[in-house]
Length: 143
Length: 198
Image (cartoon, rainbow over the protein chains, first blue to last red):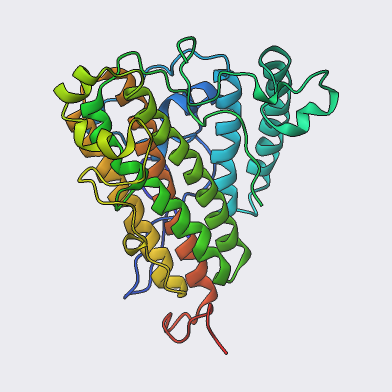
């Protein structure tokens, strides 16, 4: 779809749209973007889509061991949704690969300290660490 | 197939149990616009979708919604953990407790069990994607209302994240609809249904 330049705050709008069917503007380009930590805090990688109720926003996420991995995985995931509808965006694909590689390292760091996130990690395990808590829905010691 | 990842999409640490709040949040677990319906709607619509972009976005958002189901279940669980009978009675959680103990059951805030009546799978590209856009808006409003009803900062932190995801998904479904339109008859997008064109 052709995108015309306009004053819309974070993107460009299509020049025209057919009648009789819902149309929302396509995001043109994956920039600007938040850093990965901020993306998790705000629930999106893209400032243009960050539209909070009453402009009240989170300033941080709860401090948990997996927070860094969650931020990397989340940024990669949100960018992959963008890529689903913008599969010809080579710049976004290259950033996606970068995020995947960072997330892979983050996963290795996390798993070496806290145990497996996925069962495929048990390949090198000396015991069946899959059952070690806490499980994701538990909040810690008392369970 | 699906493989479990042993982590939440977004961290949840609720300091104070609050069964009164759990009673309303459970609506996003099994209520009319909740995450169970969202995941089943998208993952089921996939089967008849033409075009790789549509198969992709429904698979990826549908999968994310399963993660949100886990998050909402986690909220309900942490808000109701270790409750005494006195706390259960004081919060009016006794009607739920008598049937479910502290189990997490997919129901609306009004106690209606999850029902597939609340989700639309029409087998038509435009109808299904329009349904999905409406569904994201309805879930966004439910999270808005939870934010209006809750003053627990630990809960609201998580709800704001989930609410924002609805806005992002709405955008992506809208883009998916735009992509589908480009592939349809430009003079009459209703000329035929590419998901059923024998």
